[in-house]
Figure (cartoon, helix red, strand yellow):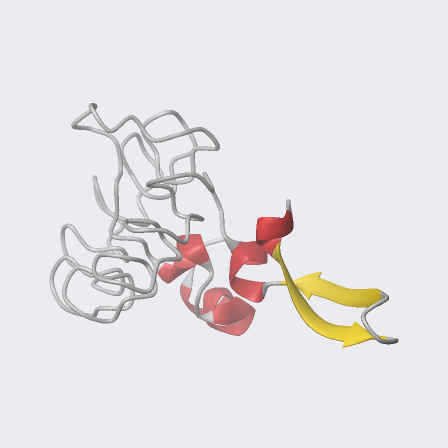
Length: 138
């Protein structure tokens, strides 16, 4: 559970710590392990490197071009059609079943129908609650 918190201050000579929720992690929906939208390692939705949800280059969650998390066309994280990040059916980013992006369990890397990204900020929450309220389905 500590993955969802960030220590922001140490008080009284290190005897106490103030812990607050990390805004991106607190909003993230889905699996927090390897390959999931709430994972901060390679390939995860909270990863800042190539292919990650916080990456703004090609294929990243913050990329607006084809295949990116902010792309609204087919294969994009903001696409509402089959296979898209905002699709709520099987294989979509917002599907909560075993092949969906917000499934609470580990993704099935061997299933070609399983959603593996791109990680839309609507799933990861990396752009904050105000952005999500304005741009994401509820």
